Image (cartoon, rainbow, N blue to C red; front, side):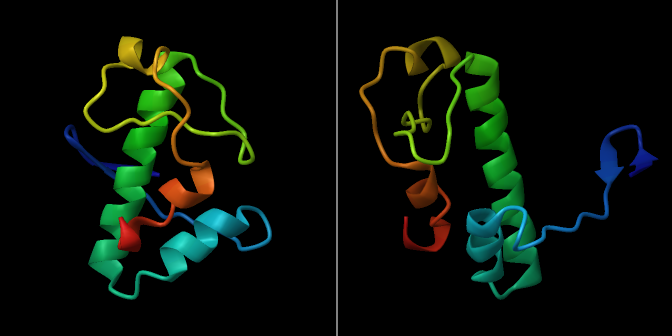
Length: 92
């Protein structure tokens, strides 16, 4: 990881199908490299919000709805989509 400037990170990242198969499939299905990068940023941002909220999620548990919610509000939401369906960005 290199710091390109004070306001930008330049990273080289490898996502292996055998380590994170659902994430790999979700990103591999986006053929345009810029859109794929945008999708990864979107997933990272949502994951960071969930992590900050203190909610633990495994791939088989229902995930909270994140869009438009505050971190505090996430604790009170009913179960929503699964993590696998959240990865299916192209169809949302």
